[in-house]
Image (tube, rainbow, N blue to C red; front, top):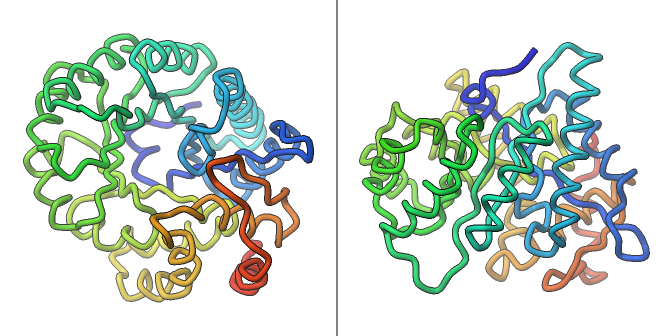
Length: 306
């Protein structure tokens, strides 16, 4: 049993952390336990190799293994529960690497790939289309989701990409401006793509009001029940309830956003450490929180282990 990939995107799209052992290697046992915990709490869309997973700090072998482990856990859990779990593998960097990673993800059992915004000082609009078209053409059987963080990228670029590539089915939009998002989505084709609010819960209500039907989340690692409650409120049109949840998580998300999001992953891992689920370790150029910030995170997440 599989879930329609468009339906999988119109949900909480969890970005799992990558836990590390004391020697700095990936702790695969903890990784599997964290993934099972997400699924056990009702999360059904997982994105290994997202930014909360420290994608850019992982080696190529570690990124491939992250996809394999996520698919293994998803398939094993789904076989027991009967509830399909969809894996959206993060891919990117230079084009040959992105294409190879997308092909590996498909062979491993992922249903979709999320394409990180190209890391290059000079990105032409037409070049952006060419880059994503090359990835999409390499994996015609997978759904493809561009990760858009550039406020200057026009919606017409995505419209053109969609004309060439029917498997480009969704967009993770992460420009912190709801008006820009609304215009981009309509210029690209609101009904053509599944729109995922790529800046997590704090932006989800505003983006949902203008066309998003899903949102990404790093918070979900620590508090899956809270993320799913916001999804349910938004689906029901209960913006009053969604904003109550918004206020509850706001201090936590603001800690993640400080200093241009320097502590984005560190705060999530500190929360998981406070809850006893994994070590707080992150890799450079991120850094674990200083001692004085740890108590604050622990106080915020007390009672969130649900």
